[in-house]
Length: 364
Image (tube, rainbow, N blue to C red; front, side):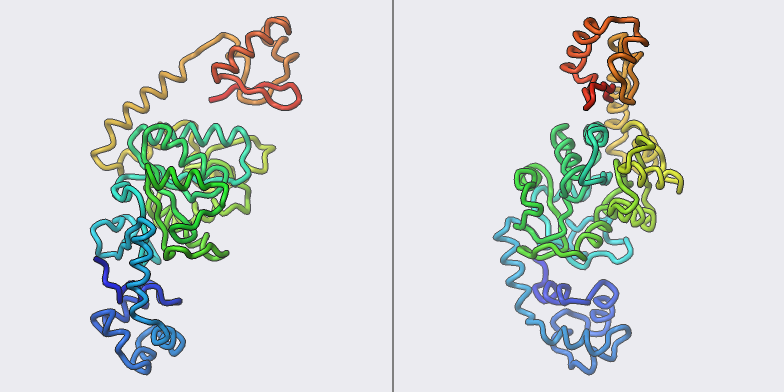
């Protein structure tokens, strides 16, 4: 069981990893930190009077109450020396000093890939997200994302639909569903995946909690895939953190006219790897994926290649860019009546998507 005094100390505002190491190095135990004179604490390297005052204003017994609330929420408190603490997060800059987890904690030790993107994604982005998340999950990788609306929610759902694992990183405490529209997803991930957060149970999200959450999304993963993102997107913050942590960064290209693809294109210009299929990600990560994953990864690649085999001849005339019925008729030589029947069948089979304005687009 995690030391309650450590829990109380780790949750003192302003006491991060560096200060915690200084305090424990000087006082040897969390209980001794609370018992030390404020003047002694203030004089330690990097501390100061404000930090010492905050420690003395904290009730050491508050750690016991936090642990009890976590258990009532069905979760576990993880300190860095806990064997269940994700190994990947121990070594990142500004590593978390405390984590709260609920669900299948074994997911935290599996090789993982982060998938992030816009809350206001396009249809293309949603299809691409499901395609990649499902393929990576079937290959044995855990899909990590931030439990937000849009791409995050689609990534978690697609990974679970594929029978794989997912970890949702929260910007709030266990028991708080944010956004409220994701309640069903929250319950599903809690049941079939894992939820992870730095925040104690019941804590509401605030503006500063989401950027800090992003470093955990990237830090838990071998690489970070950005599906769609504007140039001001928080997904680009996650990608930058991934680079700082020595992780791979992948980006899916989109239309040059779509604002939701500008962020991905910017990443590609800066050196992110352009990917068109889940196998592209698996190939790049082959050297760092543990030995438990390559066989599944190769099998997933073969399945993906087989699914991309040519289908109806009309698909050769219909690209992934929107096309009108008249233009398609000219390309294929078919009448509008014949095209209507064929396109309906292809739409039912999932090969074609109708778009506003009477346009059609081939789907992945």
